[in-house]
Image 1: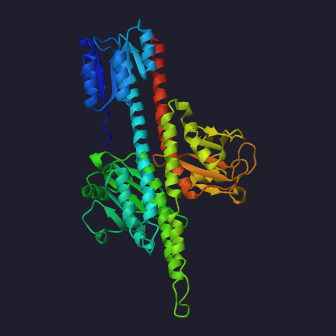
Image 2: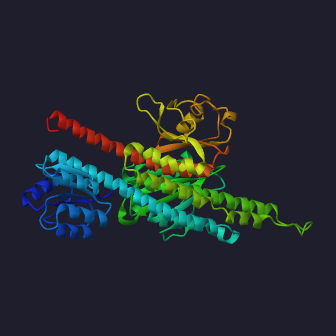
Image 3: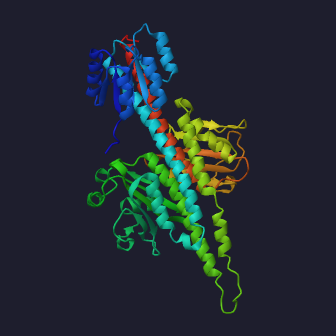
Length: 515
């Protein structure tokens, strides 16, 4: 089940061109609406869910430049492809300065028109995706602050599983959510809290570790996205049918809840509002939330253990309990919302950068500043050699990271192979350390944070940061950043596919003698 594509608004005062454009686009499977003049176009844009406007510059009354100006002012997310005659170069330049995404010269070539509009639709979808992700991260930041404060005391922390499930529902817009925790025997995941269901949690079936999506996400310690359970090869047919029968949607997002001692359970979400499937960006947000929930659950268990071990006995009735002081410390822990804020900064930096070649540099710049780290570099695996190739970095005026490193050696190779992050102040003390791989270009060992970057369930690269302070950031911060950067890498891949399509069209036109 795919997300519904935005519609196209075609604006041209000549009926022949309107109909020709509509037929070409609808022939390519795109939904169109037409307008014959500027006022009609502005009215339709105000009421419709459009992603792209194909706009003729020469319009009677309100001309195309004025229509473009009003569209950009009132609907900045719209992508506008302008149509012009060869003699309109000054007007075309003015339109591009006002924010038009592309222009086509009349008479139109159908293939060029379709590719230009599809490209504009894709850039609109990418921008819309980042806007949604940024809004969710802002909401997540606020909700995490509430969660931390509400979990600071013994009495309120008893509701932590319920609040966690509710937070997932609020942030992802999910109709049904649940938190499953590992039982004492270590063999099954039991529902600790759920939203959107009529049954009490005691009546929910436990999930054997390793079975189904939730069990697989737990055993692999890996977040998993299912667009359609009925067609997902990771779920047996019977289980998939049972799942889709119990839920309104076949789309699921599941993230493991980590702790320093291992995975505690999983957070699950399904039945998104409107029936749309969950996307990679949703999974990134769920991973961030799961990391914070794992931290809070671990802290709660520490408080319980401390309370039990400090209980006064008959021989020592005046013994002081340390648990309240521990709880007070947790109440002052603001790192969870700070981590979410850093993830939001990454997303904002990416969405503000329009040049595809600079997107990854933009993504890692807030990380370098927040962690006081240099160099910070992002590596992606080269499909031909298998090596990790540096795709973006911030060196802070100091030594740079390496341009190419082995994907099979050292701590960096371990992160790529296992999907588990490394955060250590002294990487050289680890037996897996390789000085030719796990150091910057200068070869001197330094504190290392190395994060896995995932795309569609596979680890395709790593981020390496060398903090100047000499202290590696927490594993929790690393998990949050890995989730945010994985979303950035996904959009880089989309950007590159768009660039490839542009170059393909240009090459085809040159070969046909049309350029």
